[in-house]
Length: 127
Image (cartoon, rainbow, N blue to C red):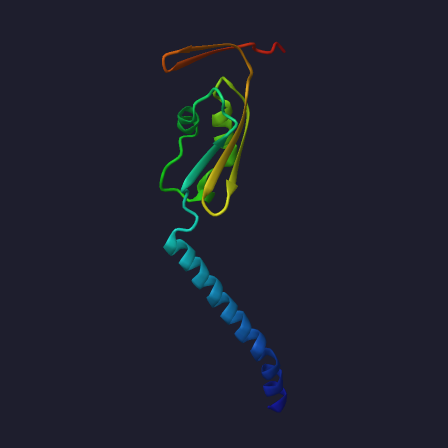
């Protein structure tokens, strides 16, 4: 009988510490969801000189209520790169709530500004 009691006595602190750790982790996750820590609050677009920011935001087509982790960054990047004046794009997450879009635009051959409209003419590469 004493042998079993000694055995349980040795494992008791480990078991209690494990239970306390699980409770703390659960409470932390509950608190993060409660305060909506990872909600997307900010979108930063860098590198756009000719393409307007609204055009880029319309291309990525993201919802307002989603968590920052609910976005597929590869799909967002392809959507931004589908704009004809953008050469490449990089979409990344800055924790806790920022979505960053870095773009590299094609260099225009001709740039025409008429009132509020911008017309770009590009030299397309031939493969």
